[in-house]
Length: 295
Image (tube, rainbow, N blue to C red; front, side, top):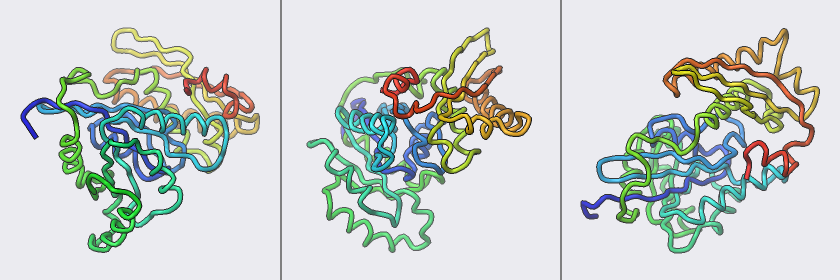
């Protein structure tokens, strides 16, 4: 390495639920990707930006690569993954410590040639004896030649500094693309919709969130106050009552939790109004997906 400034794009890929969004948030020190235990939490490609005195790392958090639920939404999510891999300087392939299977292997053929791929073993905090991971890592390395292997815990932060150091080694010498205080390329309007969707995913049943989306219909700023009008999109009439809850209490609680997170992220007061709309079959309707911001 030289003392020259380095800048580059870093794709974070992996099957659903390996901790890609948690890792993105940990690396940049700010919550730009929503998280939950459910698959399909991340549906869009999101860039998080980390700038130091010597480098700017532009992390691209991607949806989990989908192998089931073959709807237009799933196809759009897989296109996002492939698009993110098309023009990056480094790929971070995130796997869960102790778990390796067909869903992980499906991504290997998608890795671009001549681009270094760093194998990230996440959730190592679940293993008291880290030596137990050595055979596991050797087995994965037999399927692909990796530029490096970095074990870490995205949730606790252990090993993330070592990952940043490793990534910088593979970035080209170039000036920064974003300002030093930028932490994402996404608008506040988009971040607001994602925060509300996170609360829906975390508080509703196992199957319902896959038929849910959020559309911010109005976003206005008056000084430090943001007025946000957001519609929760559901697939069926029966789902509307589930989201609203008895006497509207469930939607009110989720909206309050979302508003508090928005105020923390935006650094100002938020007035949030939410309601529920039914759009049958939206997840398999290309036109509806485009109107909701899915490529």
